[in-house]
Image 1: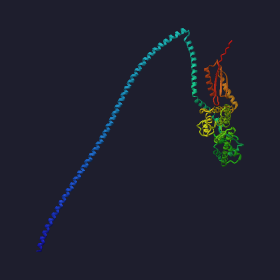
Image 2 (image 1 turned 90 degrees about the vertical axis):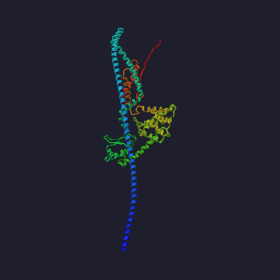
Image 3 (image 1 turned 120 degrees about the horizontal axis):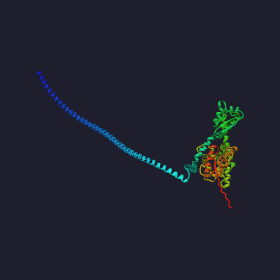
Image 4 (image 1 turned 90 degrees about the horizontal axis):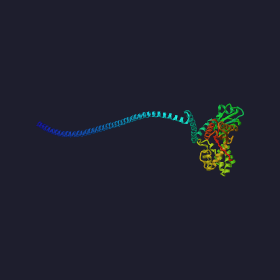
Length: 516
């Protein structure tokens, strides 16, 4: 019985399990179908989205390629248009040039024909002129009673006289024109003079001689291996030349104050006997101080002697430095003192300010003392220094205008200029011995006397003017101008002279008649 129950239960369990499994499978099948539908739907949606994206990308790529193609096409079209325009322009230019060439060719052809016609006409006219000339000459010979050769000679003489007159007039015009450019020519003459005399002047003005008792001192000055002389040159700034010149040592330098310091230092060293680099530096330093004190003392003594008061200390020091300067071999301080005294005398005679004239005379060459501003003329530099140290405007103007560098605005300016010329023109003032001076005057007079028609010659104003008296019956007025120019040219080329020489040719005609 139990087995029956078990069998029934088993059968029932199997049926129930089968039913349960079928229900479960059916439920899973439904779930699987719904999930498959869902996945399919999502796949369809994703595919649709991807399709749309790919379509959009394709459209964008198409539009981009289309734009690039259109741009490239447009650029090519523009280039083609420009080339076509350039070709059309060149074609038009070539056509224009061709037309111009054709027109010029036609004009040249017309001109050639006209020239040929004019040449033929000119030849015919020339033949007619020759015939008329021959007839005219025969008529003139008949009427004048002169042959053609005689008439030609007479005509030549007339033309010669006319040519001479025209030449004189032209020469006068050339001289007048040359006066306008006289500054340039004057500079040329000055440069030539400088070139001819520069060597001698440089030697005279840049060298000092230190005399010694015997040549043994030269070795002591040189020192072992040249130590002493190198120390001297370094301390003084002067080149010391020890050569074969007996009992003399040459001191070379442009600054006369330095040369004087070197000379005095050498004198002290030789007198003391102790010559070595340390002693040299000590002695040179003491000598510099001494020279500076002497310069100030000389300046103060000069202004006291001249009765000048209130001068700036720096100007006083510059006046003292004039003692060691020279101009054309003339001591600058002595020259300035002379000009100051002359100016004071003239100002007193004319009733002008004597003090201003004396100050201007003393300071007129103060611009030659400083070593700076070499590009300025010494007159302008001196005027600037006077203005810097508060000198009177009349004094400053006289200093600046004494070589006509600026316009004269005060009455003492021409006085200072004249006194400067007087001091420099004095025979012997500027290193010129009397014999040479007289010789130059005689040479001037003899040069002028060598010309035909010259009666008398006079060298006046210390050889700065030559007056030539000519015979009126042998020299005309026009020839007198030529004679003056010729004499001045020979003086320039054949003679050496300071400054300038004025040549004056005098021609006098006198007509005398007596009433009876």
